[in-house]
Image (cartoon, rainbow, N blue to C red):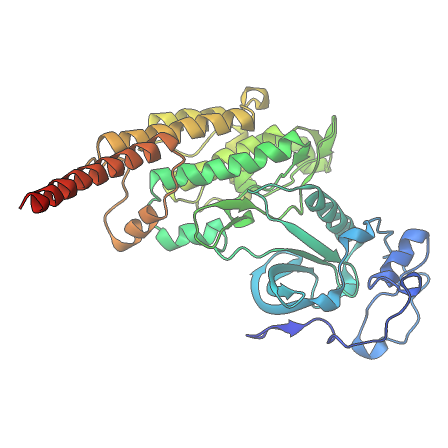
Length: 406
């Protein structure tokens, strides 16, 4: 269904006679049957719609998703492909013909091949997203489990943070813009961790930009889970951003679970922040085994040519001891203070070239997008404008009096 326009999925809307509410079946009814101990009717080949389900099939999963979170698949229009994952694809779409949305479809080519494990991850992602409402996290709209597993969220027009950085390489981003993006990420993570949720897969590909490309929102909660005390699945995430406690030699060999907490997200955040500051890939050219070994031996990306203030934040966040890493609420405060300090410096020395990227067309565009949370700076500018207006008014009154005297 890759078309330039939008196509309805999977069938067109048709006007039907009204049915009493108590007799109306939910559009996902076939799968909902499984939550009551009944086998669901899987969608196989198009020419096999009338066949009965295989009662001996072992791929049934009793979904326990609240029906209030489910939407009618006929209200979802599928457009162009905008992203590809290991077991899913993301499309641009429309919800109820008017709302631009992002549609994540699991195993879109053949829904019947979705494993029980994938269904569990799908359900966990839906349940977590439905509980999250924050300005720095993509907004959940609804989900479908029939005829395909789909998660519908708000459409982020600014693309991924990863692609945004690629467009400016090899030039670094403006320092204030980098810190502003990091602040958005930290705020979103502060909310998640405060609500007992670990993301476990923080990386630029899982972060989306607003249309004006000035703000970041967290996305892709496929590996996220509620934090519990004790052992949890090891090796969850992507190696370049994965905290060392997530992989141990024992876990790698035996598939055992590991003891860790939300501080794994703080480590991943540090690697992402380093990328924002340098616009480079961490451990570039190294394979996963090398990255895991280097992280376990406390090797980190270089802090050369980075301001001392951000270097100290990075060192604290990617500390080998998880207990030594700060909480996201502390990181948020540090980044806000750093950003205000940079804005104050620029206001005091407007001609200063400090913290400015190279003067080419790309860096100028990045600088124009810089976001500064500096109320004091805004107030000073307002006062300057008022002073100019007052001077103009005085001159006008003086001229007016001269005319009257003549």
